[in-house]
Length: 413
Image 1 (cartoon, rainbow, N blue to C red):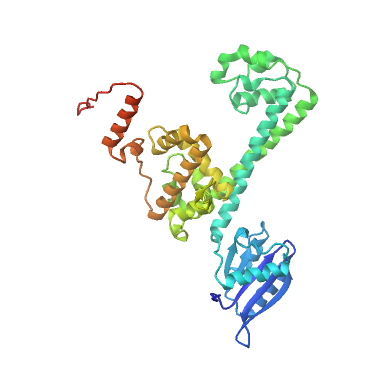
Image 2 (image 1 turned 180 degrees about the horizontal axis):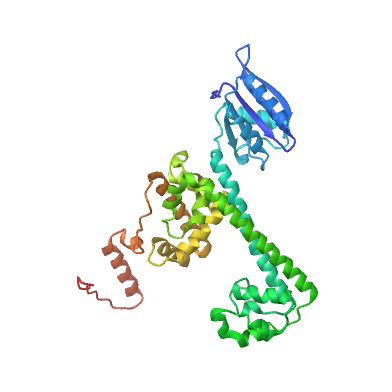
């Protein structure tokens, strides 16, 4: 088999140790290898870096094992060409798995050019990604706490959510706080309603009549305190994200022109895929990497279900969230696409398809440096011959037993 890389190394990364295998030319004109195990402490990683440099290694490959690869990769990326490899592409013969064998196998795959590197963004994008992901985790935790508060109120027999749309809105928060502080009179609690909710005072008084006990008050107070902390932490993270992402302000503004994509989603897109689309040859490569397009599953000429591949869950969540918003944007291409697919394929597949379209649009917006140009809700109908489409609709009506005659609308219509 042809040798593609003369001096390379494969790393099998674990929590406490890294097994490294170097493959280089030997004195006899063949291929020699040396295998050593290093600790994953900073001192051990520096020793391993010097050991690799002593062999003149030019390419280092490692398996993407959890988060343990990160410290190893970050320390080597300035001195070597580092490849992060997908674990699915590295399967060896079953029953022969050891750390030494894994490191040697990775080195051999690198040597013969049988693997491709995964996308690892530059350092500034990685830092932004850590911030946006943690902010999303806090937002999700806040949602879980709000659900716990609702369960606590339901356990006490309080049906506030049946009358108020948001139990943590201005009115709902005031009522829950009063409950925690010891006010149990339904009429007094209902009087704390504000705005349009005051039109429902009788319903509120009925919903707030319950058995709110001491342990309910303790749990609710802790939940409210945690929600306040999460809100403050989210604001601090958002301020830091705004500072870190400032060099990419133009790209964020361009992404913000896409229907369904707000500033927070635009920040997530930049953090997950970067601002330089040159890393992806085409938009198809980006969609495949993100796991937002159908996979291939063909055998013996038969095509089976091609479900989407695994990708970044953070990117997928942002795209699906944006797709839901875009589907509700009247007069847009995305809303027409969603309506076209939902009836045949269902809500979930339609949302994924719209999310895929948003990702493709984001690729071209960033690649060309141009804002989004709306195609309109009629694009899917008018992209082909209108005469052929009209004929097909007439034939469908005739098969249903109708006699159809067509009259063109006046030009002014």
